[in-house]
Length: 291
Ligand SMILES: Nc1nc2c(ncn2[C@@H]2O[C@H](COP(=O)(O)OP(=O)(O)OP(=O)(O)O)[C@@H](O)[C@H]2O)c(=O)[nH]1
Ligand SMILES: [Mg+2]
Image (cartoon, rainbow, N blue to C red; front, side, top):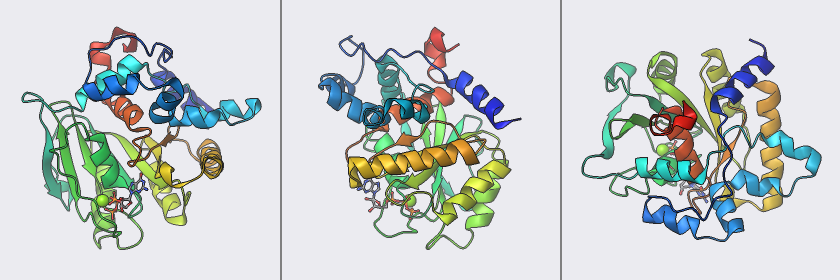
């Protein structure tokens, strides 16, 4: 399929109504998101929609380039997704198991999403941040690259599984290729691969190898830009535009919209939870607008 055709398809599947103006509406939601809704509009946008906040600094003719409206859920949808990431006695969120080979991976039918990227890019930190509403879930992170050595499976109730992968590049485990390639190629319930790129460093040579692999296996994947708290606004904008250009011109299977995140400020984390809830089919079930 031509690139434009594929993009159109992706865009259609994920287009959801834009109703972000209704911040004052009361939601039945966790106290955390209730606090977010109390923030002044600028601060709320910066936290929940960091790409929108960056876009304000672009010239009008550049604004379309960021594909901001491809996934643009309402605050109500975002609140629902937060609830999905909040463990209760009946909705358990927990570490399930680890595997060094695909045939050791838990045999699950529920949808799965995985997180790949260079060692030290922030995969485990991102999963920990996504689970911050359920702090009893133990996700190990480290300053030293090459910390995660196995594929670690975490279940979110009966709804879906998230997989933290070892990093590629510096200090990658020896069996990385056998482990991760086989997983990406053959895991039947894998719904989406999140490919993390360090927003300070940009797309490296090793990232392009991972991107080529995703393209070759025809995997639907999404680019997440990590550590956005580390850069000035100007530098971050430059990096985002460069990476966006790469996605627009050099990829076919990559979701057109980028997801910038910080596990320090939590920018982009609520939106990413909502995206995961959506692609695993867990917003549609409760919301007729998505059917
Ligand atoms: N400033 C900042 N530091 C971050 C962020 N995310 C992760 N880090 C730091 O980056 C380092 C690596 O984080 P990890 O989450 O362990 O990275 P990883 O990709 O899982 O690394 P491997 O398991 O080695 O592949 C840690 O020191 C984190 O504290 C972020 O959003 N902002
Ligand atoms: Mg890790």
